[in-house]
Length: 164
Image (cartoon, rainbow, N blue to C red; front, side, top):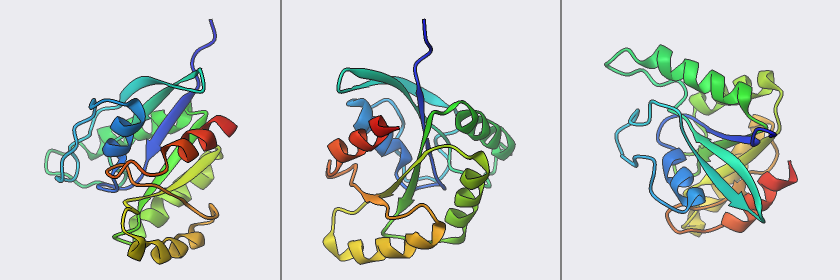
């Protein structure tokens, strides 16, 4: 049996990776918490899109410095998720705009040389949309604007994943 293709969700802390994971999974699996660094373990679930199953993997925030010294463990999990991924979902937060940690994540993904679906989350308010243009500088083209909380853009996102 062929192993399922893996789609890994990566990004810095608090960009909405877990919300996006739950939204695509269609149920609440991942803990959604405003505290940075709640998702430390690699969580995964099987998602079907257009009758095609894939394994969706949520990861902890990249570059997190946390009080329990789990940074190294989180980073190892992220490295493993990227390595095993067929496609990486690179998530940024349009409300916060471009921050240096996004640049770090981008640099790491360029080195990984994997297909990337670039996603700008939290675009439920049109006033944030112009900010999405700032992310062009990361080199992954125009981000696909979605809102996991407002359930906007899911079909486009799944379509983009299936293209890879």
